Length: 72
Image (tube, rainbow, N blue to C red; front, side):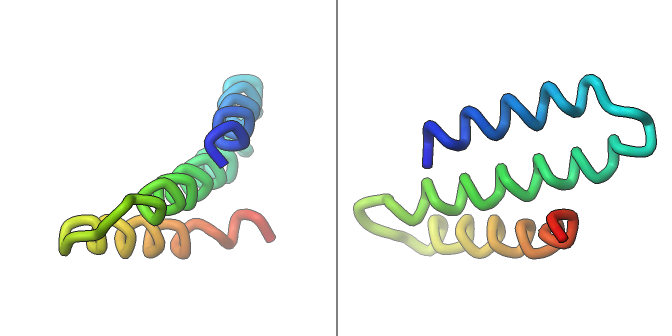
């Protein structure tokens, strides 16, 4: 997931730099959505969880769900 995240983030960022003005919002939403699911995946693999880590996971999932429509 970490290696995939590096590739996807780099591709989305490069595409965002070369995009038309009308494409900027969807590409930014896709990048934010992917980053949130990658952060969620990273926190899930912690050895133990506290209230803070659970809150982080919930925040990352909520942010992902707010932006996920960009993929449809």
